[in-house]
Length: 370
View 1 (tube, rainbow, N blue to C red):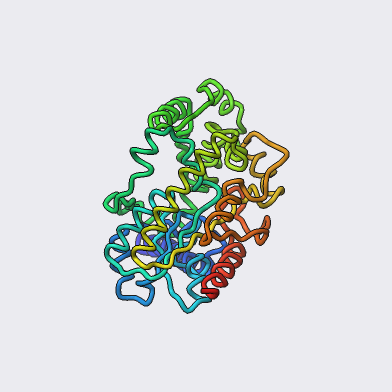
View 2: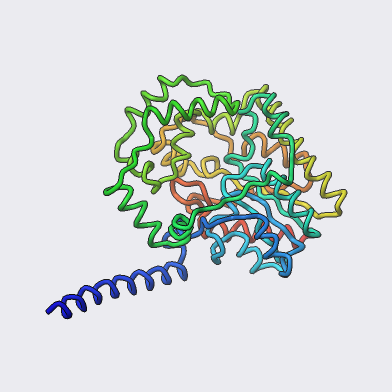
């Protein structure tokens, strides 16, 4: 009797295990089903350099943030698509959460160990041109100072490494465990107050009061907050709406003083890269990835309604800074009017499979023109 019971329990667990493994394998073959999961693995630059040194990709490098790292090593990834369509093969040195400052530090470290011939820098219109939010002292002491030894990495403990690298565990944890079993509720008054102090300490120029932030949070939809708190919807967009409700309008059409400051910072960053590339005889190009909220009115309407950003009637299709860079740098490129609503992930901003397909074609055309 005990033997039969044991056998039945064992059979059930074995069946569950096999089902999970088969479903995991299925999702790895078809990653676009759950695009947000399974790709955010460890990202250690020294290991990437080591892995790329003996490959065909070693002399060609790509730098960027999650826009370029998204989908990991799958065939949906932007760099994977570029490599598939192009004779030049690139090593992907991008890392999620990075800024132009980080791209430069990574570039300095890579070029110190690898002889680069071609480098592509992917700049995201949505958050790579916002260093003007910092005060001048912090800019001059931190943001505009570059150091190859300070390139950022992403490391996990053993358990987190397993969860982050799988589709199933990640999906179950975010959509069921965090939503219905263990609800952390970390977005509370104490967290928001502490976060505001950190932003101020980091020299962000936050012009909104804590009282206003807390009132907005208190009246925010509990249903939507559950999705954000569990990680199903990226919390960074919500925090942005709380601390910088006018963020997208400031990014799209800053006033004359902010625009002058924005230009000064970005010109300094791009000129630094171009100078290094000239000295090292590296063919460097900058590809600007459009912000979804500027491309599609439908996308902006859904996004602004969900996160409750301040709404403005008139948005430029290209932000002022992008237009300026295109006029003043001959190695800056922008896929004007190529992307639409369906080319971005909903409420997320990252490119969808179709978006990466379009951008990869755009990039390959630029490379072929050389």
